[in-house]
Image (cartoon, rainbow, N blue to C red; front, side, top):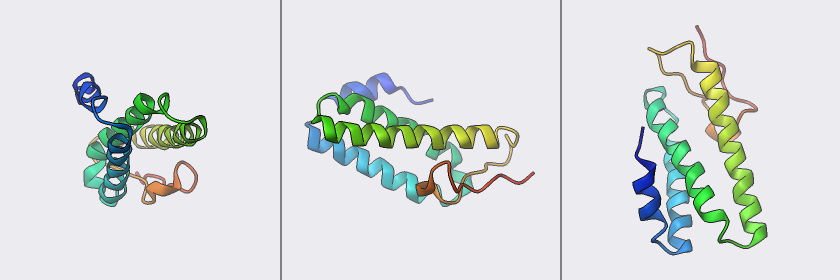
Length: 112
């Protein structure tokens, strides 16, 4: 797993607009990488990183913007948990929801 302590130290040195840009870039990478089941581990790391970016930034934002980011963080968490629960039985064959933007509702169930 990624060393998030060093990522946090680097991330927090940036101003808020740069941090939000990093979050947006991670979300775009998640969307692109999740198109292929072969990228399952990379998407897993990106999801975790995006969730942490929100955690590290939300407290410094206006309450309304922070609330929207926390809602996004919750969606990412739910999506990640659904994938982990549904795909844990296929350790040798990556399985991934086909519509990452759909979140836990509307994901594609793994096939045995």
